[in-house]
Length: 61
Image (cartoon, rainbow, N blue to C red; front, top):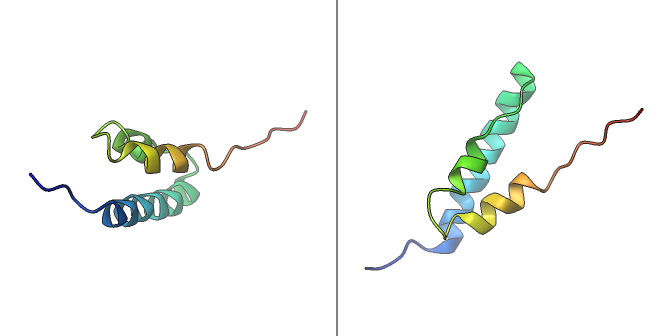
C-alpha cells in the first residue's frame, strides 16, 4: 500500500489549523481539531504536535 505524501498531509493539517484559528477568534474558545488529528495515524502526529505546541499563551499575574 502506498502512503499519502507527507507534504500533502502537512498542507491539509496546516489548513485545519488556519480554519480552526479563525473560528476560535470568532467564538473565543479553544478548539481541539488539530489535537484530534494527531490521533488519526502516526503520519499525522508530528505535524499535529507541532501546531498544538507552537503557541503557548502566557498569563500574567
